[in-house]
Image 1: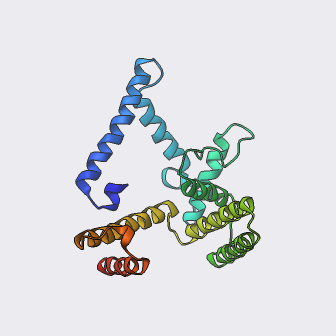
Image 2 (image 1 turned 135 degrees about the vertical axis):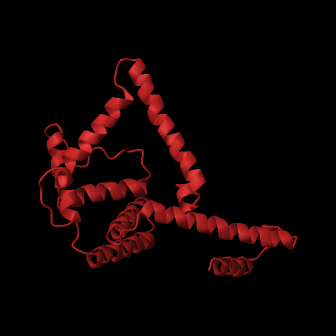
Image 3 (image 1 turned 180 degrees about the vertical axis):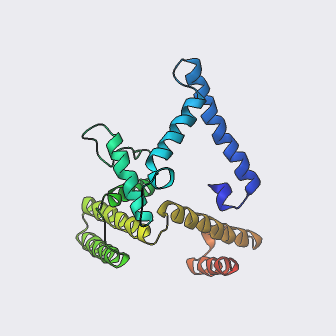
Length: 214
């Protein structure tokens, strides 16, 4: 991801190689254990893509991309053992923002979704108001709950804006690091430790760093 965001194609090529090595490595271990081979992995992936894209590999007709996603989930649901949830398969280990996005997307594909971004924005505003009430009441458990609800609503908004929330936050973090380092470097040039710098001075340098980003 860092290589992609930095538009470093040479580094990206290297990282793809590292990923490919892991896939081949684990497949080789499985083959030596008599379980499966890399050919089995490739064949299964190919069969899955073919099966779940009948509009490409068969005669199915679709009206738009949303219908493609709906068909994908219907085919996937038919492949699952009876009684399994459409939300299964989203790893718990994913970062929370990304996991929320995936879960919401799964639910949306079977019709459980908002109609438009305006509705979602209304929900964001509602959750913000509830968080403000929790802050006024100074209840830690409620503040945590309401903050979680607000973040979840913002993830929903990101889907309608077609923005990946994890990627958006990661880029914001990178900008924060870059701007804060600018403050540190400028203060170092002036021979002043940060603990002696006022917040107003740091704010001015922050805006300078922001302006230099173009």
